[in-house]
Image (cartoon, rainbow, N blue to C red; front, side, top):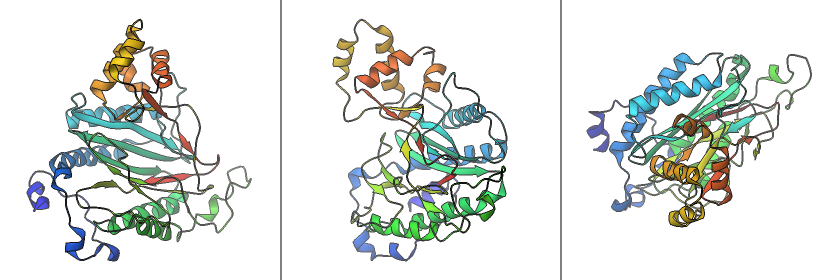
Length: 352
């Protein structure tokens, strides 16, 4: 009923049939708490904005500055979603993470220009929100066909995870399916040496590795990570998906170690939902720093508890905000999310 009602307004996109583990008896799966049902209309609108932006940016992506790609995505999504403060707009900064950087990297003001190259593997991860309901979606771009095996493995694993997802399904079972599909693929053996002829980070005949410490997640209103995690590896997580919940199925595959760590200059920030002092306390603490108070108000009014980046702050008129942002981080009002990286020389792909 929901599908046909909203198909009249938004065209259907890709439709995947349920896999075998998702076919539990209907009465066992559908126990919906009506009070927590998501705003399906808002999600469908956000999804359509994301779909049109993906189509546009796929046609544009070429060897140019990453900053130009980010700005085009920001401008396109802002126009299509009719951006209006925290009511509708961006859900988090557009991630443009290259090669061994898995996630949480976007150009900062003043950074040296980085040009997308032929041999790069770039993850494009951006989100749209309408009335706080978030569509979180990502894909990977590579010009060199030798990376196709890696991309195909991660895309197939993501689609397998989506097909397995349903009310009543254990999250650990989904992780097992994702890992089995992804690690059944071999890396392209011609990539085991770089153009100088020296060995890279993997041996010939190596399989794609799942990035073990990155996973999918549940989503709630204005909350991108809402508590439940969808693993990408087999585990003993007996938590189940429940009717009325929203999930992002997100997988990462790599030619590297399979484990990422936080490293590098931070470009993703978020107002802390759990640790931030009361707004009145912060106003009292920074009463002699009007620039900090102005930045605080801007963040709360425009992003609430969604992520933001220094580029957005600069575009909003906060040209010199480094000191003020650091004060908010040091006071636990704002949390940092640095880039997540595998070992240098590896390549990571992502689909979500």
